[in-house]
Amino acid sequence: MFSVEFKGEMINMNNLEQNDEGNVFAIAYQDNGHFYVKVIDNKGKTLDTLDVSGETSLDYKSTEIIGFEEPLITTVFIPGDNLYVSTYHRI
Image (cartoon, rainbow, N blue to C red; front, side):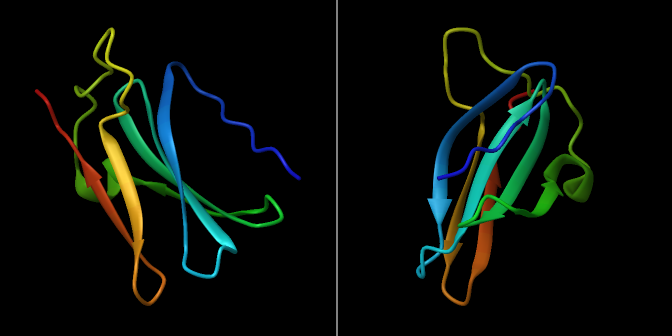
């Protein structure tokens, strides 16, 4: 059992995805309009934190929608341990 801490201004996340072997997990989240994906192993060690907004040149205007609990970002593992990331830029 392990825990992972997230710090930020206004974090919003939804799903935890795992690879086919169940030994790597990805958590897509938003922190006040900035999109990230944190990848961890099954011991809780952070393997990578992907700055999706920085990699895709998205601005930070897609802040959370009050009363709508979705983070406007999702991710899924696809064959070959590749990670697919999808964001919704609402402005």
